[in-house]
Image 1 (cartoon, rainbow, N blue to C red):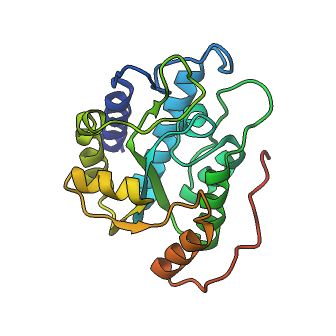
Image 2: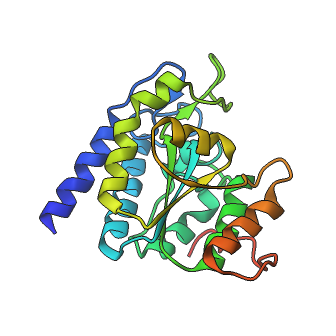
Length: 228
């Protein structure tokens, strides 16, 4: 128990230590417009709880996207997870309560909604991550998304390798062509499924359904309740 906790704490500290220009690190940075005063600590706690639960129960697969988005992981500290699905994330992994770190109404993200529709259909513990685990944005425009650079990706390779060593998943799914190419650039083998954005939702659903042996059909539920 103590050894696992130390491994988790060391990993979270490793991610919190990352610094890049025009990239928001949700585990150490605070957004003056939306964050609560202890937002970075809450997001570190969210990641700690999720990873600890994943190590406790084990995960069959890790889903990897490109980088955090400003409506999702920037606010929650969890990849592919917006505030509307914090409860769903906790339930999926059997984690302790995951908390919001921002003020105002909970924000939903379109990609996260589709991702979580499928995760709730699968019903198996899956760990979510990003090739670049921070939120890269355009210079001077923090509420935008940009693609991380190859230099940024390579500088974070040790993070991805450490995570996969810790979790030892049977499969790694790259969400989108960009994520697959980025994983290949890191010499990590991943099966690619279509990203659900820009009209890719049906192909994403079919790809995930095929991987997990699910029937090809639209899930019935958009999301779990926000709170409670």
